[in-house]
Amino acid sequence: MRMPAIGEDARIDEVHQRLAQKYTHHSPSDVSAAVDAALMNFERSSIRDFVPLLVERRASAQLAKGGVAQAVESEPTVT
Image (cartoon, rainbow, N blue to C red):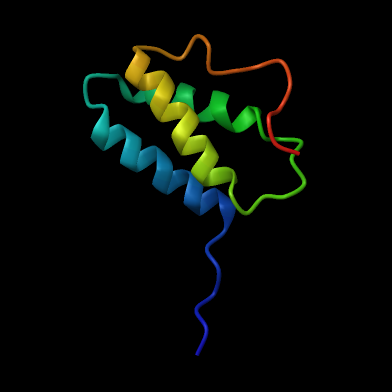
């Protein structure tokens, strides 16, 4: 029997939880801002399968650098 696919929103929530546990030195609002900013880069992407993975990588990189100021780019990187 095949398991139902987990929706993108649920996968993004899981990303948020993982990053909040990994970057405890950042406030929960900073982690949320990094995830939200990274997600915005992919809002116009038509292929959604890898968006949570890409969001996690981008947000994690920004949090590792110490902040979220540069998390949003002017154009999405994946279409």
